[in-house]
Image 1 (cartoon, one colour):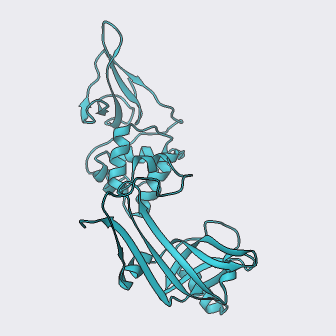
Image 2: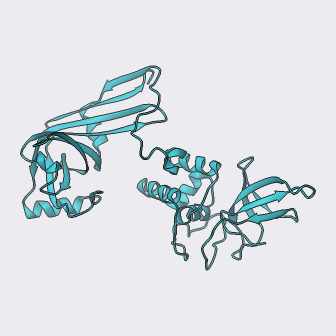
Amino acid sequence: MRAHLGDQLVIESPTTGATRRDGEIVGLHHTDGTPPYDVRWSDTDEVTLVFPGPDAHIRHVEHEPATNHTPSGPGTDRADAVSERAPNPGDIGRRVAAERKRQGLTRAAMAIRARMAPEYLAYLEERAADPTLGTLIRLADALGTSVEALRGGGIDLPPGQGQALLHPQLRDLSTDECRALLSTHGVGRIAVTTPDGPAVVPVNYEVIDDAIAFRTTPDSVPAAAVGTDVAFEIDHLDEAASQGWSVLVVGPARAVMEPDAVRRLGDQAHTRPWAGGEREMWVLIQPQRLTGRRITPADE
């Protein structure tokens, strides 16, 4: 009997052949995939060490040819090493890895939060795996997100479709709170006036020396901000808790032309514009008015 991480261990009734119990193999103790295995049972969500008997068999998931399997065990220091196998992550694995890295978590730290072996987390991130609902719940809880988000559900739906709070409280944010929420970078929306009328478009932004900075092209809609007073907004919604906040910046926008200033902005940028292409025109918005609001339960 040989298994890979992510395979299912199925125990059948010796008389009827019906499945009595099944679970996901989340840990290997031998490099050749032979027993024993760490199995997370689907009925209890508990992980136990299993020496399969004659009534057990392995239900394999799809795997690409592999050169080795790293045995599981406490204290491993190779959780963040790149697997010798060519990575082929699925959508769930990509979302887990991206959010883990965004939060600055190592695989070892993430595995502790999610109560799983680091090697199994590496498998989930690098392979087109199909984790159980229990595994997804632990991953979502460890990352502070939802199972639906990890599965990609609602990605094409507008936010805010959940139910409103029974007793919501809407309060104004202080200037310091607004600055903290703006943080250093992210995605916001800029409102400009164009020859075709008002327009609101998303841009990747940075906060540099208290100014909002973004990159665009001279013939784009955001470039219409140059030389005018504009509004810039960011927000965040917690769909599960029906809470959220928004911050609004109002001020004049100008193009950055000085080569040294352009170079400095590029050096401090956290990411390239998601829209791609050559977007080397930097625009700065100098805040003259900074306001924000937050919705929370009335008792907070």
